[in-house]
Image 1: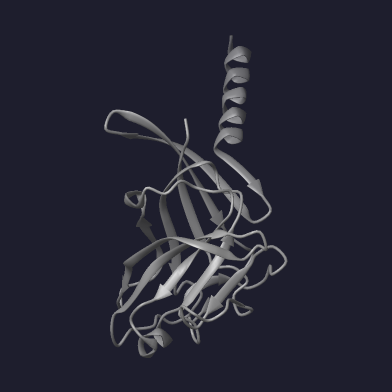
Image 2 (image 1 turned 135 degrees about the vertical axis):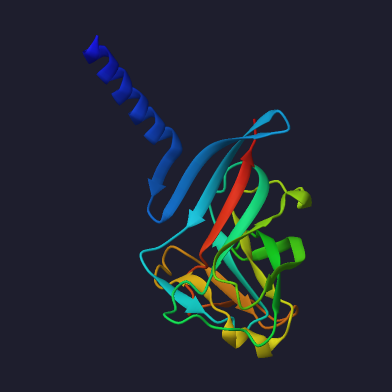
Length: 207
């Protein structure tokens, strides 16, 4: 009997590990079931991570987006960004900094195509801002696509951005693509200071 229970426990542990964590290079998929209003919603979070991180000061740019690939099919539920996580001393802001979330489709050339979301004032940063900050975008009612450019637009002016740093991968330009532009009409340019923004994309999976 004890051998049967041990085998059952071993099988259950292996099954759970396979179901809940699937690691591929620098991308982590974590699966969970959330109960909402009596319904079971299956969610998956795709995280862009790397072996090391560097600060992105958002200088000389109004918009910065990173290409996120292999997004599960479903509805976009939330996006998370990381701030001031790689600096030894904590910065303090002289004013509040405001950012909106941007989501673009990917065109046939692998560049940002149609802007499908601009959630204004999604991030209002102050002196307490540090670490992971998640923004619920379920109200935008967006269906996920396999590839999307996801990032931020600066809304509050250049004078307050020197105090705020986004966490970016410090290497991996062969894996990640980050683009920036200085205005709404300016062309997209490769953001070499940031291989890829550290971002989590959470999706409510299709049934």
